Length: 383
Image (cartoon, rainbow, N blue to C red; front, side):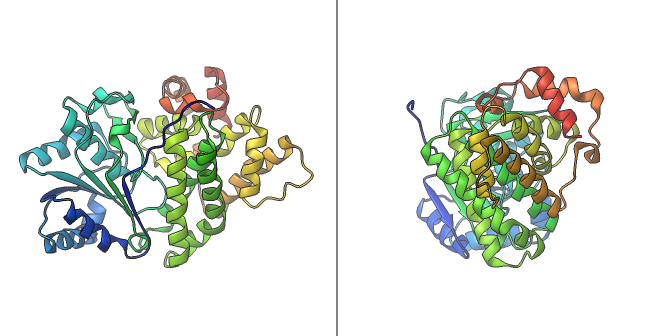
């Protein structure tokens, strides 16, 4: 095994009620003025205001940027950066799910390194650590609060840029399941399948290690056991807490083993059609794994077992097919759309989607490298 690196925030707050402890710890770091990057929904329901009040009680003032879109754009990053600079903020707080976290990473990265967020597309392009960032999470799926991945839509090219950079790793992550109980069923389902995709892609990645394997398999087990309950009974704190752990473990796995063609392809769907990332991942996941089963059936057999499938007596190829079927069945039970056609994806766009997917950095660690024809065939199978 070659040398490896393992990336994580310095401090990771977990468990019901940990938000209070995290604010106390922020105070000890000496910060005085926060730019809070969030979205309008969380601001309108009062969650942002409650965090602002808690910070104020500890002597920290705040400026709120709530313009983050579901697929954050270069324009969102520029607007947030302008607010940070105009108000002389000394750190950034991201509050929400993957969209605010990614937008905040973009703001923090450019604040420290200069230029435009487009300058940092690719792997480890930046030279300086980003502006200090504390990521307070409200969903159980993206794990963006702990990762070095930052996905920003270039609205001019209609492309989601994959920025994979050690300098986008937050200083602190906060996963308080009490903040997740208000998630609607559809968002719980989509973010849960996003977490499953992270775990599966990390497990079959060519960069997987024993460390990432442990995280990925445990994440798959927890998602299999708790996602449906979290979707159908959002107030079930046990399910919410276990899903928070699952998505964190999945994030630890893919943050260090990277991903594969599910994400490389889903990024194009999100950037081209402005579709929800977790839903795109969920629809593509079984079809990409059917492709990967050609070279990694043993790995996918382990995925099937973690999903609760009985694989005793089966060949690796048969067990891998069980994994594909189990993923489809779980998606159906939580009302994920059955195919891309339901998302209004058009076959005439396949050439552009395929071309851009093959340029996405996430595809580099897929266990089987694909031709353009094979990527197009996966898109077609997922319709």
